[in-house]
Amino acid sequence: MSRTLPDRPPAADELRQLADNPLALELRDDLEVFVPQLPSPAFVTLARKLRHEQRLELLLPHATAEQLTSVADLDSWEGDRLIIPKARAWLAEIARCYQLAERSEGELARLIGEMDSELWTLALMHATTVIELDPNDNMSRHNALDGLAELRPYETPDGLYVLGAPDDEFGRVGLALIDAIYRDDLGCGGAIVAAIKWSLAAELEEQLLQWRRGRLADLGFPEWEAAMTLFRPLAIEAALAAESAKRPPGVPIGRASEAGLRRVSRTLGHDLLQRAMAALDDSEHGERSREFLLVANELIVAQRLEPGDESHQERSVLQASATIGLALERLLAAAQPDDVDAFLADRIRAVGLRSLFRVGYDALALLRKTALALHRKGGVSASEVGSLLDRPWGPALRSLSAWLPELALTSTKGTRPIKSRADVVRATSLLAAAGALASLCFHADAFAVDPLWISRVDEPERLTLGDLIRTALVHESLPGSAGSLAPLTPTDVAWAREHLLERGRLQPAIAQRFHERCQAIGAAQAGEALAEVLLPRLEVELSAVEYVDGTPDLTRLGGLMTVQQVSVWLQTSHGGATPDEHMN
Image 1: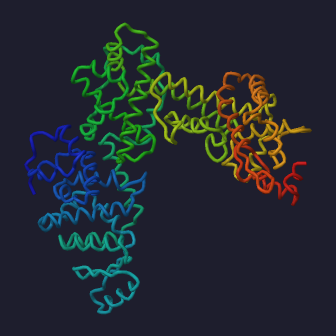
Image 2 (image 1 turned 90 degrees about the vertical axis):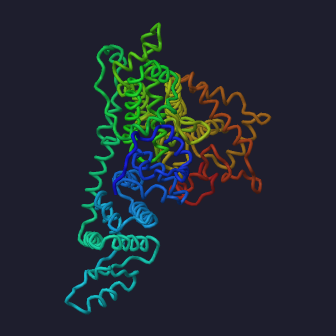
Image 3 (image 1 turned 90 degrees about the horizontal axis):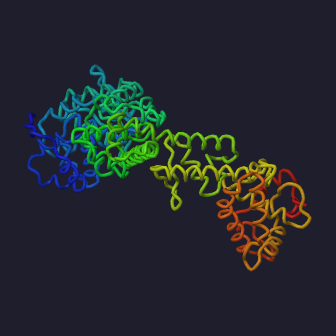
């Protein structure tokens, strides 16, 4: 069907309004010419929302093969694997909407030819059994149906095949889709069924993956290896020395850029980046906005996120904005120009936003290197990175050891991008405190805890270094205590509650001993931050000890290592003695 295309693609305002209210398509009488002009990412966004509203008939019958392929590219893959149920569901919706729109016979077949027909084959191949009938054998049909007795059968209209699929929603959708193709074009239906019978799924998926990668590259999503070059630090001196008159080559726009520009304009959250972009002329602003979007797309690929996920798209924009903003702040601190806006705009012209991202990443890479060194050699990780560290240092180490380091949020389990030099300072102090916590636990001049205790507890993933330090503080306070740390018995806990608390507060001597150990390892400054977290927990746990028949209930005690937590080790190492006897 020929279509008269509009003079211009939909404006950003139109796309934004449709994203907010996709049912506004009902009010248009030009869907045949409007829908084909939608950029692929915007089309996929609308398709998802209309699927939720169960109104895909407003969109899919008017779409181009390229747009419909983009739905599969951005919503039916996870990593390098096609998610068959998702792909089959989308293809079934396409066929259903074509029928509702009363499209002419052969149009669905034409669409399959313009799309990747291998996608239709692979989506229909799974859980579909194909038996080819022998035209010279009158019993072949009967035998085929007998062989498919446990499946839902389907006899093709051309009389060449009998198909079987599980009698569940997945199987029924597949057979209904094959029937829709046959009803549209007998030859196309036969070709699809023959391909289902004779094709190899692995080969089809590999072909589709290669084609998808090419299309994603056209949309601004490069190969992973190319995207990872974004994480090559660029020294600040290089960005300062670049000649302003030497502009980098023009940035390829890509088909996704026009749709993404509205996200860029809404989410350039960093003040310095906003000011610098505002100082550019209109043509430069448009070019750099497209470059910014490509950086955001590279971040999606480099972090192995799904390109079609809107939350990932929004997140990558925030990450790009924060890291480039950090670079601009570093440049300002180094150059201290009189005209800030002019200087920033000049640096953007000189090196481009992608290189500025690498300048910001130069500071982040050092944080990541430090975090990984602590993870590998600091004795702070068991089940995962930083799992032995108390909050906030454990989550901080995990988030800072990622390829793109971020700051862990204290109120939730999430993270946020590092967007300023102040954030870098905070991240550095968190890493320093994490390192001090490890030294305080294991160093011979501090509490000298034997790391073997970590492997002796029943659930190492629930243990923290803070638990070991608090246990050591209690253990060394016990009458007649000598030697290394040991798990606390009910008697130890009862004694500690009675003698280490004074009117519900820890005795000052406990804090004094703690700070003396910090000073002994040169961590007096970090010791203040550590004490604010570790010591109040000891006070709370001792104050809240519950008793059963006059004995502390160790099952309800946290923040300390007790014999309850090393029960398996005690049983295998010491036999069946009572908890108090184990430690005596």
